[in-house]
Image (cartoon, rainbow, N blue to C red; front, side, top):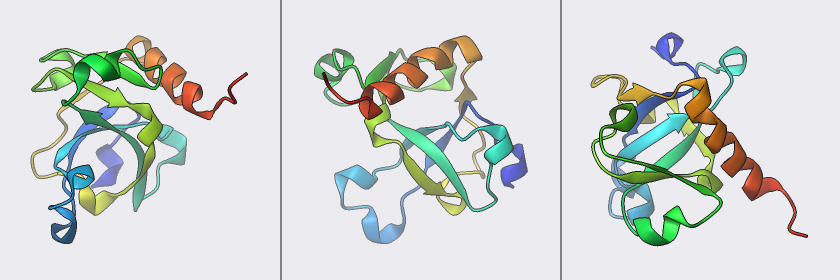
Length: 122
């Protein structure tokens, strides 16, 4: 199952049923950022996409904006890179398959936004 997952792929995250009432655990697209050589059979490092509060999030250094249709996304949204986290392989919707993927040049802003989160403020 996970052997078909690569860095830059976008899948739908399916939260465990006990978490569905919490907004943070809504079904949403996530971007796989785990390097291919470090892929694990059980977990992937991913960045979630959000489609709410776009105007304010677009201005944040930790968010990268995408338009509907770009990379297979169904809505205007942002990749919220400060929420980089580990997702279990069972939480990604392999039944529906990959939504889309980012090319290396489209990934550069994601990498910069991830670094924006981790760098100390002057």
